Length: 180
Image (cartoon, rainbow, N blue to C red; front, side, top):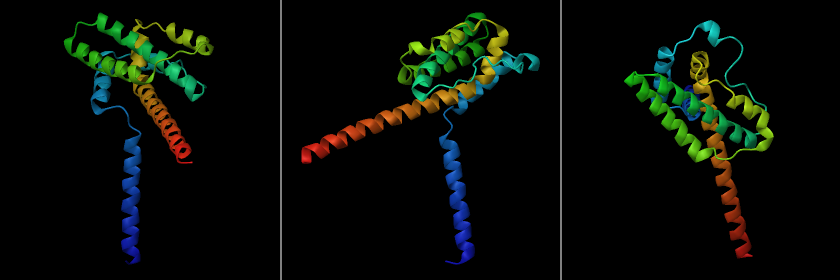
């Protein structure tokens, strides 16, 4: 194989790997992104309100185990926001989109985010105090949603894989001890 053929093959392999890795990091479906984009148009807020330096969901500095609980509460707040939005709209298309998004959040939360840790109380109280009926909060929350949902999905997958690896190690140890 000549140098040019190797270079082309290497370039194609790098491109394939890059595409694979970039797609692997995407947890939000095209339908979900489309629904959120259309809801952001419907619940439009001014740029001043959107970028006022105070995100609805502040960044955290917790460990993964704590983030799991925190993300559960963040998803609870989103469910409350979406419920408020459903109660406030008569537009059938908006209701359907909100129902779809809310259903995906409930599904993610049900499968991956269950517990609460008391040490996170202050941060959680701030989340619970979010005014979900405020149109500015709703608009900002929609703008932050994809990022938050991506984090939640990534964290859920990471936790699931870690749990699966622990199970495999225990099985290997049992097998090893039964052989000896």
